[in-house]
Length: 230
Image (cartoon, rainbow, N blue to C red; front, side, top):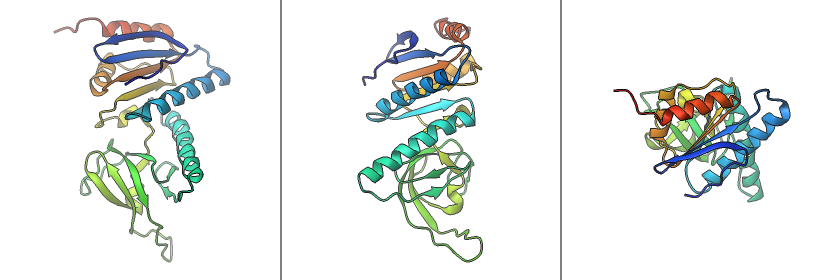
């Protein structure tokens, strides 16, 4: 797979078939720099998702929401442009989703085979049946493909176990093997070396790491080259 490197990269190296790249933003992040970083990360995600599987990993739920809202709106605009229906369903954490949106399960339901961290995509949405009272019908509403169980019908209550899955907190990155992972460390707190190695083992082609702390992340990446202690 071919993927262009981000223009502002400070470090780029390869180990086998997996390429690592750091995107280093200024230590003091004014709004313009932050927006620029988000734009570049979104651009990289779009290129990756056009030919393979990809996800943006974030260290906070708030950072994930920024990317998810943007990519959901793009999905809505694409469907409108193609004159396709754009029904929506309510998810957890104030999200709504339409057909084609990426999902991630954040609350398990073992009876349904739904486990936190499972990812998927909405295949179809039927119009919900609104009942008297609070309208909390348990009627099948969404048809989705979930990576851990395959195609499944989700009720309105099932949907509240999911949130948009274009960008997800690292804590929910449990099961899927993506071709591309883009790790956005917006808080500046660096992950443990063991966590980076775990991501390396789970990523097929490209791993991007974005952080505001150039010195620390350079040291972290350098340590990846060191042999592990037995």
